[in-house]
Amino acid sequence: MLSKLFLDHPRSVEESYLEHAAFAGRFALRLFAAGGAALIHAIIPCAFEKTASRMIADMYARTHNRGR
Image (tube, rainbow, N blue to C red; front, side):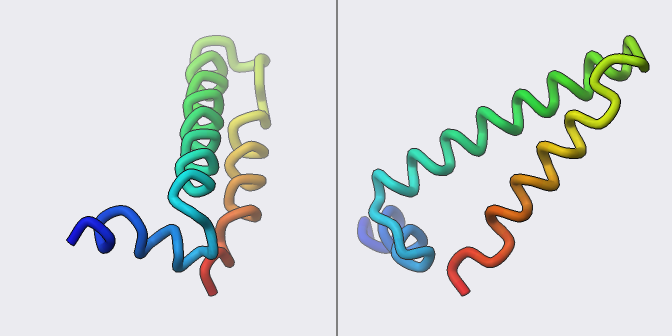
């Protein structure tokens, strides 16, 4: 049961548990940063005009073929 909870998914993307935790943690921080840029852009339209969309496109490019 514990193996299924903690190890099956990281193995499916060819990572150890710690490697996967680090990757997912960095991904989460980038999502927060993109959200912050989008929030600032909502208030000040001339600020961060393409930052959030560029960050999300980069994150998608890094993840869409993982585990295939």
